[in-house]
Image (cartoon, rainbow, N blue to C red; front, side, top):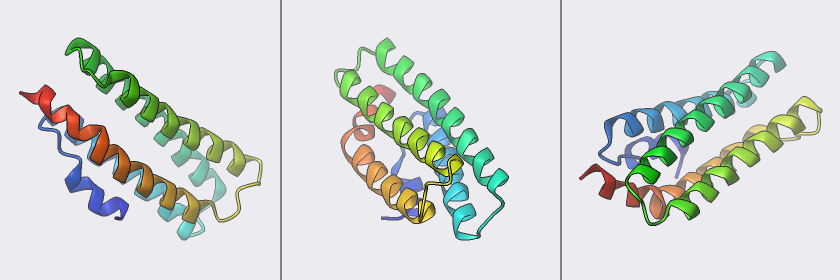
Amino acid sequence: MSLTSLKDGLRTGINGLDYEHRELVGMMEALCDSFDDAGPSSEVSDLFGALYAEASAHFALEESLMREKKYASYEAHKADHERLLERIRQMMEAYEDGMCEDCGTSLRRWLEAWFAGHVAKADAGLRSLAE
């Protein structure tokens, strides 16, 4: 499963969340592509920062909705969000320290795996909140 193919599988039926999911995947693709294209380090750093900020804001919105609707799997879903944010932060720091060899490939693989699991297990349950 690629990041691009994930865009269609992120539909929850909640328009705002669905839009933000597509935007986040687009940001992830841009970041991974910037590694592939050997973009300037400032561009990569800016994309890491933007992704972290946008993902944090999106997760806050999603978690607020889950709390409001008393979503049963809230804690596990939130923990999954925290794992993604921590991984992005770790890779961002490693990149800034010059310690991230093959960052683009490893980041892309990790994001694809995380999203494949998150969509199948966690976000599938959000569809019930749209009703």
